[in-house]
Image 1 (cartoon, rainbow, N blue to C red):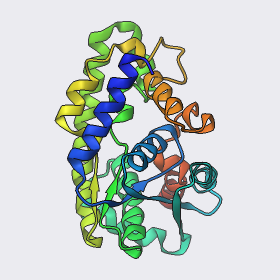
Image 2 (cartoon, rainbow, N blue to C red; image 1 turned 90 degrees about the vertical axis):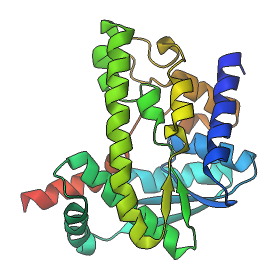
Image 3 (cartoon, rainbow, N blue to C red; image 1 turned 60 degrees about the vertical axis):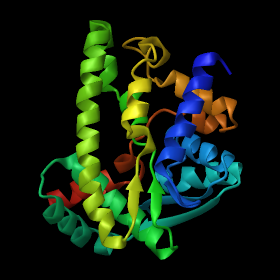
Image 4 (cartoon, rainbow, N blue to C red; image 1 turned 180 degrees about the horizontal axis):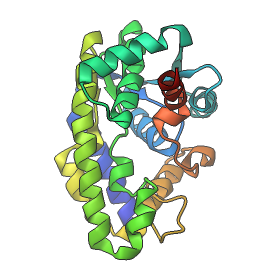
Amino acid sequence: MTNLVTQTHEKIIHAVKNTVTSKKIGIAFSGGVDSSLLAKICSDIGFDAVLLTIGFEGSHDIEFSKKIATFLGFRHITLTIQKESFSSVAKEIRLKIKTDNLSWNENCIAFHYVSKLAQEHGIKKVLTSNGIDELFCGYNAYREVVENGEKAVMALMDSKLENELNMMKAVDTVSADFGVKILQPLLSEEFIAFAKTIPIEEKIKNKDDLIRKHIIRRLALSIGVPSDSALKRKKALQYGSLIHKNLINLKKT
């Protein structure tokens, strides 16, 4: 591993160890590079990690996560969202978090189901890889500003981080109903400060860069995450689980 990749690896390990005390943990898992990297690191440093995947029947996340979890050899449990009860859950979440922000509602719905799955299997702490997309230019929006220079990228990064940190507070209110704590080691102040020192070109090349997060992908490959996951383009949780599609369909009825 190159020095910068090694440093990133060490900082993620440190962030995880500083966040989690119990050995048995759940990991919100889609099979993508971020959650696969987190799962592999947690396993490598001795955590009893159970992969948790939610989604509608036939959704990308359910199918793809099974493939990657099998390759990694980790315990993997899934929850299939039932269309019959989805409407009432979506309404309950919207009333609880009191916002019309679509992304917040979709993510809180997703973590409602993640927390439900964790509770059913006696898991009280669930880790997420939230923070990687914000800090390593994972979102498409970074392509739109990268040619305006580093200042523009960092301004977008700060905006994305602020939104993510606030959204996860809303997620906390949802997961608390199940006695589950959702933890984001890569949104710690220390890790954010480190990640911001990594050169932009290690994250995104130019406006045509559809892959992005290059240093994260190199790290994932170097520690044994399969290339199908490590090199896979981003598919947000709400899309991969089909929550977005089903929530939009509810609004049309």
